[in-house]
Length: 315
Image 1 (cartoon, rainbow, N blue to C red):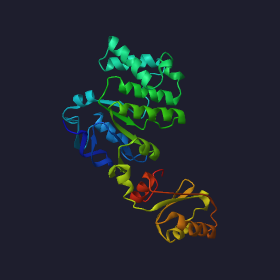
Image 2: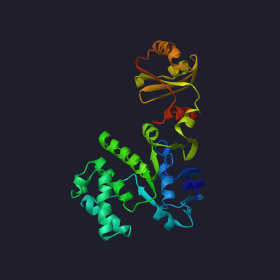
Image 3: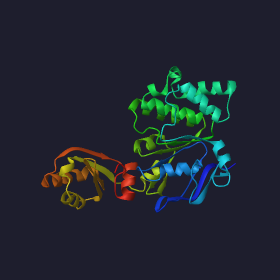
Image 4: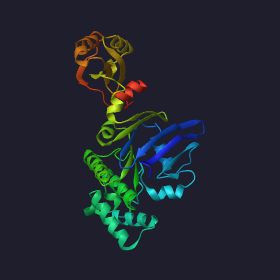
């Protein structure tokens, strides 16, 4: 048996003139959490849709547990569980009724299905709300039931597409803990997100995707080495005060390698962040930009994305 449960080979998808995924190639090892990290519109959902056999690739192929997504889509579907970005639940039914319906769609029934429903409700922490209608649930609770649906048939591999978008911090924490628990129990997880901190917390390995292309892949340590030993300096500055002249002046400061502005902050990759701070603040003051906050940190995934693309991940 191969160590890889998923292998993609030059996977591509076009919608008319728009090339959503461009020749993506990667492998996912059995038992790992593999994250696809990238901004909205990067191609993450399209990649998962192809691997789930919901849409056919324009070119390329992928093997899921040895089955081709082109040649054996039904065999692929029997291996995977899918947690889509959009909540796929019947609002007027209870959580238990939704799980009963989807379990029957998987071909499950009887005591086996009832036992499994109880187990997945316990896994997502909603056993006490099983009889309540979905329409009474918070957004985070709906997403947790969405995860429960994807786990019903005990898949060997689960795809989670942005499962924490638009939910409260407590529900987000619950979902991240659930992903960790599932992985500890032996499940392989493909997790997509545009939240850097989620990828950092969860992932064994990370693929960074942008404009449909996989631009980097590795462990967090391997990816951080792409930036080197430089620091990331963030200057909090009122957005109206961030001018082209200020950015040009900061680029010319000693030790500065790269500058990016966005979301009320200027991020810089700097040779020695602490040594550079006085000059950076003085430069900002000369350009009438008031610095309201400063942080200096070692390279993280945000810095890697900035280094590779020239812009921050949140842009």
